[in-house]
Image (tube, rainbow over all chains, first blue to last red; front, side, top):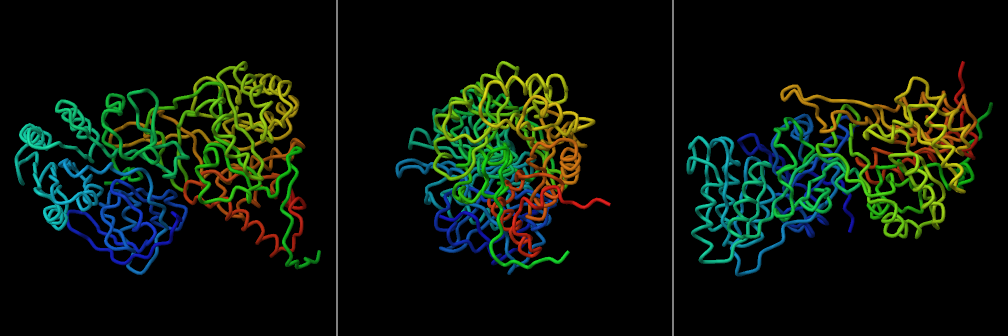
Length: 277
Length: 312
């Protein structure tokens, strides 16, 4: 399979709340992409910015097209936002390992924080209507675009929302309502957690999963240059010692394997060549 | 002089320190893994050779993240020489590369002279290795690496010891983070090296002004990419004038024209580095680009261009 493409932009529109939706014609990718995988996108053909940007695949729309949802966070994504329908983009993918899919008896519980929802959107579409989604953010305006929340509602059994200021859903942290939900649900059905979002949230979800003895898969982000396992930039610290590459062994990891303590949670601003979600 | 237009395929082959290269295009260490990472994009038979990611005696874990940061037309990295060690390389990585008709040059380093020598010994007997590139110039590790490459006496002693250890051609990868690179080139020549690689990355730093913290966990890192190309071309030119050893020129090469700048400055071969991250087929583009310019300029044999920049 060829993973290096020039993909035509079929549609490119703002979605609200600072997000854009870009639809790309990429038949080989559309037929093979799995939820949790990502693509490297060259936002410009010039040497500045030099590196391609990683984006989680948010949906496969047809046999020939796929969707990326992104927020403008820096120069690269700003340049991408300026690319029009009909133009082509250099594309490498699908890359990395996706989420292990649940068996039929298991209820998938998806947890998205901040801008971490796109790969979970793709996952929700693939796991069937029994899934529960937990969405958390600072406030209502930091939630995913309303059309995406609706799309999640269509795909899932229920969407649970928590905001820190209470402007939408339950006031508080997603992890609080998640904990209560798991306590109630774990008696009824086997569960599996899938999470994507800020490092601190993923660490918290991993902790809760361990307390409930529920398997938990997290999609990690780290800056990367190549997406192919060569630059060794996207290192994720492992409990067993050493690092694994988000692009090759990840970006999805079993939360129990990650050394959550090594990285002091720092807010990285304008850093967009991490796997974006 | 009349330029003869020759539409036939030009001869890109080069003899580099006794290593036969079908074309001058190699992969810069640390940007192409151990070849297999790029196997689906590049027919390795079409490259002059592969310079693999640096190998040490024991496995190295590398630096904590963040390890990379993009800069204008370049990037900073502080990977910290992460690698699986020489045994894993010989048993698990080298067999893949042996399948191809391409030169395999093994980049290697140590944290002491003894470790460098031990790695050279282990590589000496292995089948399928064309030469070794001694990294005395990594800016991202405290001991070893640049600590050798920025001290003339240490450079000479280290390279002399490796020279005595191995039958393979020895190529010294020099640091640009010195006042006069030609002094180190001469030290490498005097130590009996067969060739030189230059340049390694330039030591750099970037700061997040809002967090008031360095962008890299290691604070400083090595700058690579097109941003450093003019510095690299200048250093190759100065070195080629100072010593007669063949040079692998590298630093920000993206196109055939970029590669030819190095060749005209005095490099016999070139290595494509950061461009592999941007375009996994960059090496092949560079081979084709060199060919195109040679045809356009009526140059039949690439070696005729080495060092042929005309200086007023």
